[in-house]
Image 1 (cartoon, rainbow, N blue to C red):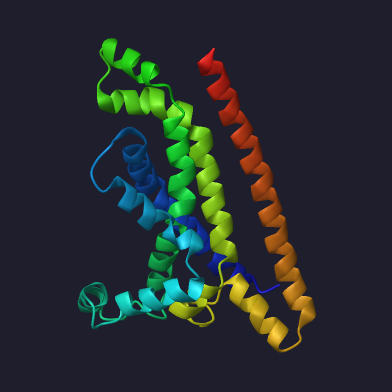
Image 2 (image 1 turned 180 degrees about the vertical axis):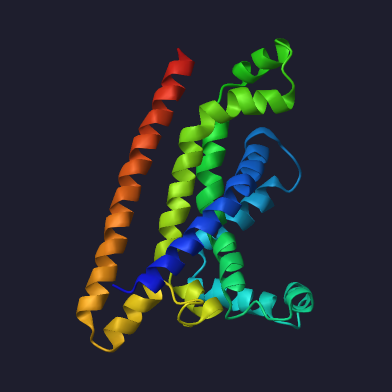
Length: 226
């Protein structure tokens, strides 16, 4: 087993999940409760990575991360190295292409909280912040946790964007999905099989956990509707 590759994949997935936890909550809560001009456009941009071919998304991210564009140029000036073919660039790309996997389940979780519960909390004197911490988060946690699990599993299995942005640098950008492809290229079926089995196990476990959390969320919705 290529443990260096496994560790790098887990590191990328964990950091992506960590970044998207607050970002996903902020965006999904805004979309669940607020109606504003351009909301449909924001939703479209968030969902776009779900239907956009990875090569197309990778192409535009390569352009955006280049030194000729503001993001890439600013990062080059700040750190002294490029976003392309580095772990930092891979992490930023991972956050962007995983955004819908975080926002959509979280938005559904917040939207499922009945408005009268939040209004009752305000009538009892709770501020918006205390309502969020004491009412909304405890009710929305199954959807939030399901979103994080989905992000983690999807990051481990992503291939196209990872290859285009990060390349295949051992210890830096070579993830498990890239390693499996490399092993098959040299007919090392044993190593490819071990990594594939690990990803299969993690994916299966993730789906089971997400189904359990979705059931919990549906139960909460039913209980609050009574």
